[in-house]
Image 1 (tube, rainbow, N blue to C red):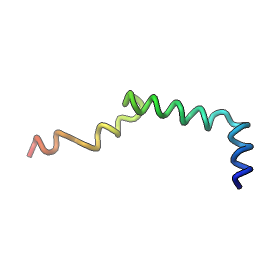
Image 2 (cartoon, rainbow, N blue to C red):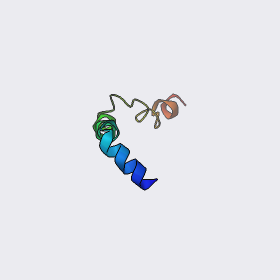
Image 3 (cartoon, rainbow, N blue to C red):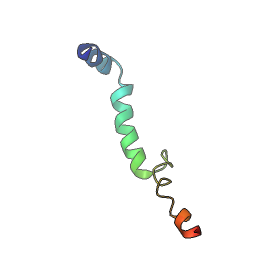
Image 4 (spheres, one colour):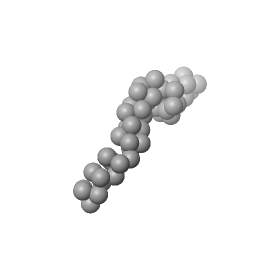
Length: 47
């Protein structure tokens, strides 16, 4: 299966590109608003 993935990765540029696009997006927190939501600093403050 490893060979199959390698061939698909080379043929599908979307897989390797999505990983790189997801990393920078996650850092900006623009596409992943769930990252800064886990801490929820408002829950302890409301208590």
